[in-house]
Length: 473
Image 1 (cartoon, helix red, strand yellow):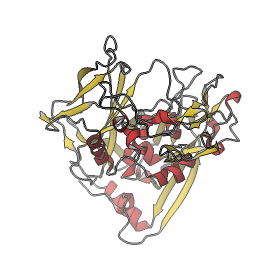
Image 2 (cartoon, rainbow, N blue to C red; image 1 turned 60 degrees about the vertical axis):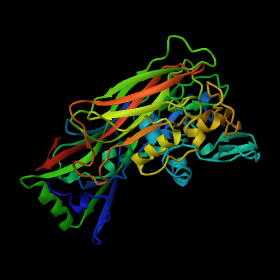
Image 3 (cartoon, rainbow, N blue to C red; image 1 turned 180 degrees about the horizontal axis):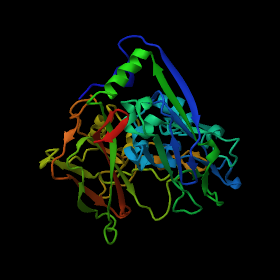
């Protein structure tokens, strides 16, 4: 396998070289309220910083009364993204908004507040509350009085498609593969395209919070539309000196061609059904579940699990539909891979869960312990572990209590990488048997909802580029 030429790597070059950047503003070749498709020009090297822009809009009555989910932002718009070369799928991200919500939780407060606030429309950074009570409150909102705030006007959604905020998503955020390699479009004979599938929010409680959330007591139309004229792709095409470009062309046109390893996402959806009837108050009941994750024959670098309760009515407006709700009584989990348990005993300690999750991103999750789980805010002397020690204030934003975000960022993760280097064999090879996920949850009188599990596996793939043609392994 040939190594990547310097022009396609994201690491700094060993020597200083001249680079030219040409930015093309591409309109989608097809666009509707449900999808958009872009076709790139076969020139230069596609930079991973290339960016998509979007705007979303309520009906006129919803002007200034709605905003994007505070931990997800504009990522809530994208349900699925597919990168193709010709008719071949190179990479795809299903349930993208859920994955990106988990990924954003590991960014620093500085990046969330000073970049994502404007670019993504998220407002999830916390600070000590105005009353000096020791509770926390949201930071990047406008306080009219100490306990009442509104979303900053710059990121509130408007019905107008010309006087409105326009948000952006980078290509490297849409596809994990674009965090490690750049595509030599000038050497590809087939067209490269990106297909985006949008989520839909209609005027019903079932889809409320899918794209946008509305202020408390709003009783009007809650449907959201895509501003199709603001959907663009700012594609950056890089070119280097003739020597650099010729080096890449020589490898691609050789007998073996160029082989490029990369990461891709594989999604497994499952659920944990409730008990036939809720347990009585003070008598919690344990449930044991086993779920198989079909990744046989693949090299897996990590697993991420988003665990969401299916609610009969929509209650958590600030986070939209993207909360991953912790359990009042801590759940326990373990994995069996290649006929071996990963942990000698099930993980139940919440700090240990957060530590295992941090290994996937090589950094700790950046939220309060009370946002990650209910462990620090519940009374362990009661069988149902009732909440008695909140850490977030009841201060409101758009009339909604900020305390509703407690325990709603409870993600689980497992790092299976053997080396941080993007090479074949960097992940754990899965044999003939699928990965087994064992989970024990405790049902209480107030927690007996169906749970939706979205399990994201980062797997190794590779494609070869030989004399203009791409083949995917």
